Length: 338
Image 1 (cartoon, rainbow, N blue to C red):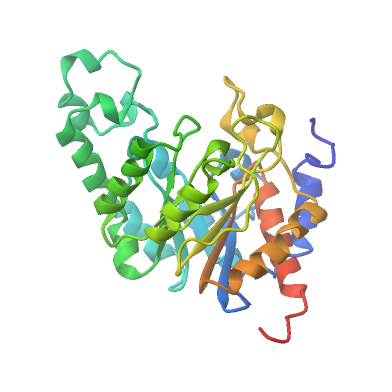
Image 2 (cartoon, rainbow, N blue to C red):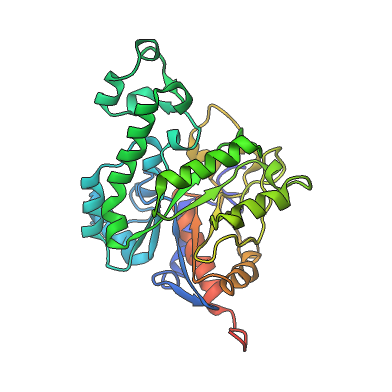
């Protein structure tokens, strides 16, 4: 797929589409019994902050961009915390720069979900506390680290997001498990341990391998999530790979449902050695977004809050699709019993 194709038309064409629906997503939508917040999985990607793509010319600083974004959408997902532990001061600044009812969803750090982290991204004091045999590694996994270091990573993560949690601006921590996290007793135990570490911090789980939902495991997976009242992150993701999780309308928590849109760019979904943004360089058309309108309406009859997040954050593709799906939801004629 190349720029100029229907699903990759370039920022100018995508921007025109988005502006036509710009008002739709600015406030939470009342759908059924739910408040539906729609936004994107980033507000700082370099392809998004490039001149003329999404932000106005006078939004040149990090502060200006967040202020502008929060005027356009009521929610954002923070992905930077996957790569580096959050600092409490950063959370305090986010509070100052956003309206009172704005919501942040926070992606868990890589080491919290069995994924590798570059050693250089860890705080200096934690690196210096590591065993000598780890210091020459480029990347480490939590299983490689002393227990006290792992405990400290969780503690610092929770401390960093505390300003959001205590102010009521934290939506949920997203525990996004990798493709090699398979449906085993050990994996389910890992999720329970994560839940125990998070305590009263709200969270949701995204599973990234289709085997969790094959004929053998689907019922057990959903029963497990429902028993622990863990919100399951529904996804729209590239189809046709071994790991592809199908789009499902599933509610496993009485309080929250989440839908994340990753695009449908199958050819780059599992490809290595490419910029991450290339995996998500996909602009949905109205028909593809429309497939989710009845699904979201169905979910809205079961939970009080739904987060819909566009992770196709190449340039303005995510912001455009967020505005478009908001308009589709808002324009649907409410059911008489809603």
